[in-house]
Length: 377
Ligand SMILES: *Cc1c(COP(=O)(O)O)cnc(C)c1O
Image (cartoon, rainbow, N blue to C red):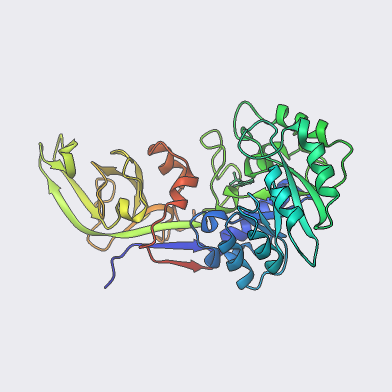
């Protein structure tokens, strides 16, 4: 028998979350952002749930190839554009749209021989200072692109650094709008946090003109971009990934007994713990401290001591019936039936917070060795 750990990718949850993005930004077309192997979910596994999107956005040419291999004929956007001139041949072959964020990429396009002119999005650095032309040089870049026979259409794009937080998007949005006021082309500015927080009534992006395309990443996977201010339930998102395993041992501890490497936890009183077949080699964060939430047979409890490579310990006090084979949910949806409330959920955001990181990192870090499969529920 293989180790009992597995990851489930919930197709219906992906589709539900995309519908939430559409409802939040009505009128805009929707990119499902599937970079980083669909945030760790697996592009092929997530495809069924995400194919209702209008396009797929990603940044790796090999991932674009996989999306095309699935039969997707609609738009595919390279969020960082091409990395070297010959990537433009792949762009032509796969009919990809690509971001242009620097002068070198325009030089490469100008030298590219193509039969079919390309669809690009010109990126503005409106304040994040990663990629893009500054507002003052944006128009000149647009004029240059517009003169190229290699270019068919130019969309306008920027990315917010603080859509999820107190700084907000106002200054960046103002810079973007001022510099693009009289330029034609489709606009795309919003990531998940901007879709949820700023597209709604009264928001800075409310109304039909703000975004022709929105870019839904993390919300598609059921994690709240602004946790802990809001959680996934607040935004009506459903977890798209469950990481679950089973207990492979139990231990009865006496007062003074320690658990795991470094003996960092010492029992102050007799207690029963379970040993779950999941460790940092599965992608569970090693720095998740003692007390990180976990579900055993759908009942909320917590980790004990340090996370090892292949195992972690859990407190069985709230689950006296637990034994070898009991289900342990590290994040996502428990399989344990619970009459009225439905199956209990442990949000990946809560686990991430306990480990001083974000849901994005945990899902992207799901290890190769964990068998994963798509399920319809
Ligand atoms: C990753 C990414 C997104 C999606 O961001 P989320 O916060 O996951 O919604 C949108 N736009 C760009 C340019 C990105 O790189």
